[in-house]
Amino acid sequence: MKIAVCVKRVPDTAEAEVKVDDTGKDIVKDKLGFTTNEADNYALEEALLLKEKLDAEVTLISVGPKESEEILRMGLAKGAARAVRIDDAHLAGSDAIALARVLAAWLKKEEFDLVFTGCIAQDVEDSQVGPALAQLLGWPHACYVTKLEVQDDKLVVRRELEGGFLEAKEMAWPCVVSIQTGGNTPRYASILGIKRARAKPLDELNPDALGLSQDEVGESGSKTRLLKLYVPEVVSAAEMIEGDVGEKATRMAEIMKEKGLA
Image (cartoon, rainbow, N blue to C red; front, side, top):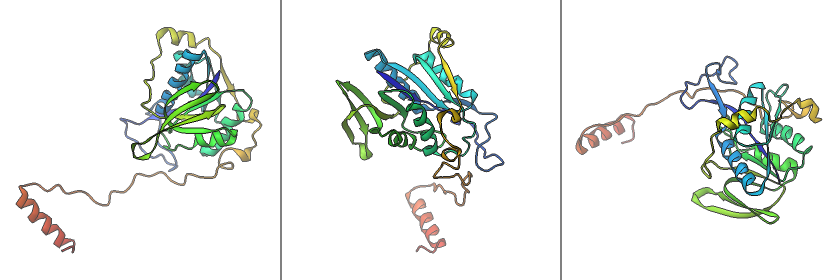
């Protein structure tokens, strides 16, 4: 079995002050740390669990700059066999569909049984690459998957639905599966794994080598465009009403009169 896992390098903004840059279309990143997209860590762990059960070969694939090799090496240290980085030169402005087109172009050159993605990218917070990738490959797809099991020639997945419901479904492979966070416990890379990762293959590709034209990537190949990033303007504030029940009721009545609501 051959499994591909799509991973993305993203800025770590959990405890950082985020500012919009001068272009108005990105954030200031020079003081931010970068890490592997959280959901992609869960996708990789699911692939590694299958590797241990079925002796599968796990390949990492990422679209990004040279710095993305850091997260690929970490994935190799955890147990992936090889990694591929598609350089993001000429891909500026690519939306989820255009990025999925780049990934699909490479995947079509290989023969994979499963492709795993994270359920969401934490920097843009969309969940479109997985479904778009499946459509471009012509494969079945399941998103927000929390558990999966291989049974003979099919895959049984359990996925989250709205309202707290769970769904179980069977899928023939090859297929694309978007993994939800929390369904497993991503492992840490061992010191020995980090040392061994240096010797594992990490290939670099240019988008031009995938046979894609300029009209298929970047803004030209995108259906959506980012117009502006901005911090929402604060136009109102909450007033905390203190006191006992009578005092609170009196103040509420005063506010309603001031607002013309009573």
